[in-house]
Image (cartoon, helix red, strand yellow):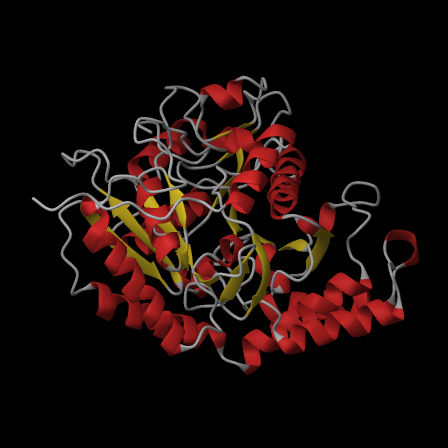
Length: 452
């Protein structure tokens, strides 16, 4: 039997930074001991000067890669003109932008925020107002529902929409209005299980103002099953007079092969409200928006939705430039082509610990078997081994999470895929993988299933 392999140790600089991070910071996502100082396109450079292929794109925010020249130029020009024009002294660019984005997506009103979590929170807030005003739901009984395995942010206004957990309960965030649990049975409204939502709305539909969900995100093995599930939820919302809210923050902006992930449902199933954020600005500036009808978003009055940094001229310059890039470079089509490349390459793989591999445009997941006999084959060890070999991706529960910039070249994309395969091929040969979590440690994400 061959001797087990070990990766090189973390550098002294990385260890120093990681220890300092652990000492002085809190929050964020599970930290990976990697620190990058610069990036161009889909190539990141770490503190030791090593080049890594970016297969995460800052969780879909940097869908246009690092330093897209048209995007950076638009930002520079905006900063040269002003620092901040917002709120009480808005510039005309906001008015023109509001008209163009409403026309682009076919809605009547838009309101601006900064973060994706803020957009999701505001969408739910609008649904509650609509529910009390138009559906005549008592404020004491109103509900807004989410579904499992969806991520809407970690604010006190969005975390209740995600799966109950000890960490969430520690903040006293049990919410009688916002929940992804059937209030009558206490059971989770599982993503992909339409019977859960049907049972809940059949009994409580008269109390429900809205359902918010990411329509597409790669947690089910088959793309068509996600489309069918989201479509069925939307149809139930119509049946029970419930607003259907599509959270497009992560999987919108051409990520899935269509500009909005809800576009896969067809025009007859258009959401009542959409929440945009993150990659809508190409990751160059924090900006988010919700769009809806006069009866929904149009009911927001002054002092009911506002943010100091929205809508600034700088942020709008970034969004306008990003939208132009998405259109001119046909990046929705490119995303669909990346899915074909990924599926063609991974269809040749055969790893006994892999349950299934998914592609939703340029968003990918490798889901691992939970009952595999070798417990040292886990997401953290795989992610760190692959990072040592040259590709940056992210471990989440029992899967490897990837979101690749649509601007990546085929050459770099294929090189990254080959490195991932090499990591999967060799994982069982490794003993020490520097930077990986111990195989006995476990930190479940807020959008994990109950079994996590």
